[in-house]
Image (cartoon, rainbow, N blue to C red; front, top):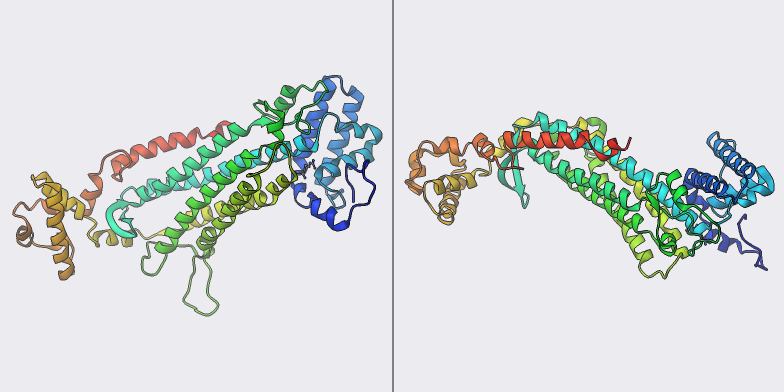
Length: 465
Ligand code: ARG
């Protein structure tokens, strides 16, 4: 049991109590961030005359030595320490002697852990945005190849109006684009450095907080030392953004599962991303899509957990906040794995264009356009809606589509029908006449693709480097 305190205690700590309190088993993930923050802290302290140049050099050398030894596997982070901060400090003192004891001058574990968590999440925000960027690129290339791949669009999971595969994929493009923008927002809002806030009331040492912040790429120091150690809003916002990503992936997975079913056969998931059944030899199951859908709950759980942990905490730091870590780490791993696997599944998936198009010609997806045909001839929309409703009923009985009826049959429903109706309600016309911004016609989609290519070329994760 190695901890940073003990002076005022008269009893040895019970083993169970110690283990319950310790966080090294999970905060060891912060190892690099902890060293980075400590180096920035001592460099600043030397500039401010709190440490001598020799002391600073000895501490930095000690810290970089510890980092290298851990990286090379010569030193392992064992659970005999209470947390990662204790591990680093104890090892430093062991290496460089009493000078190491000066590392924690003007600092508390409260501002230290707030810094470590921020540095960690900040880098994950960037990595996840990069994963999203890969997915966006694949979506855009599927869109470009399928501008005239006609398919039915659905509402209430019933065929509604015809659209294109490019248009359908474009909907997901917009969702994941918002996810990237959300991460960018979070990055900007959270990018203020809590180090130098001490336990909660700052410190009497002449720290230059702006300097430390700049050393670690922050926009500036946080402006209230009490808030700085008590704030986990950025964890909540981040987990909310991850939950939204998972919600989008889950909806997409659900559609892929439906489209991959024997009834639809709109897509075929590659063998590499499918699994078999132990009993039914004919089966090829969409397990990856199902798992992505299923893992969404885990990530929502992390968000609920941190919201609940924070909801009644008095200011400033409370140990409850140690609970922010394990679930956040689990959510990060889950989202990254899901994004990688989903991307792999999507980029190898086969789209059955012919089956999609055939399906679009059935199910009266052109009924709205047939009604619009009559409206253009002067029939009020509500009446046209009624006429086409009766027409659809007639077709259901005859088991045929509207355009399979003869002109005489059509005229029985309205004398306004002429020969040009067939072209007006053809699949192609139905789609290509929808020219409004954001609609599925090739022309409208080409403009959207142009705008989204621009977006990808200047995407925030790219511009940062
Ligand atoms: N393990 C703690 C956490 O994760 C670090 C901060 C501890 N601070 C304290 N005063 N005990 O939140």
